[in-house]
Image 1 (cartoon, rainbow, N blue to C red):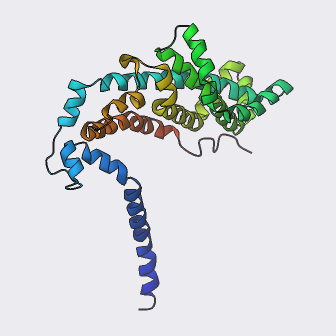
Image 2: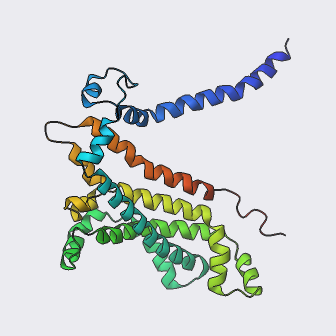
Length: 281
């Protein structure tokens, strides 16, 4: 009997840990569940707080978004802006990070140190000069303006992350590619980039989420209804004296879908140990 108790404790421990983690995960994600459940209720039912699970299951809020609002226009604008700014920032960050990782020099060293100072600079201090600049270029109410701004804001952090990950890739792999006849660009494209998948995926997720969720800059540079992004356009559901909570919950639920798809697509690239066994001895 004495021997069975330790065995039972060892057997029960994984289940206890799993139960505790499950409860914590449910508590942390409770606001998200509430938003999803409330999106299937009318505003009156939400304000009445009758139950967590919708009693009168209805898709009227989602139908309202498509028929009476410009939600899909806002969503399309946000996705396009996020993708364009992420791609633009990724290209610049990867090239700059690789140069800082593989080459040495006083100019590159000064640039690497200045990245941290630039990252601490509050963007709100540059909004007025940027607005004057883009107005002179006739780029107000244009998604190209905020794409460039978002890419520049993400560039210091993305470059630092790219440089840190390139530092973990041994130079011997590139030297082996050179011996096999590959050029510098060929070694970078065929050896370094495929091995830097986890780092590039992390940078992509960070840049996309920032551009997709940013409100202040989009609110300053985008004023026409057909150019608004989701963070700015979704505020139309909130009036001064009333709020359409049902449609707001439905819009918030649909807003999460692009980021969820991004995580699912990028998850396979975030795999540890991708370099294990690439070098012997």
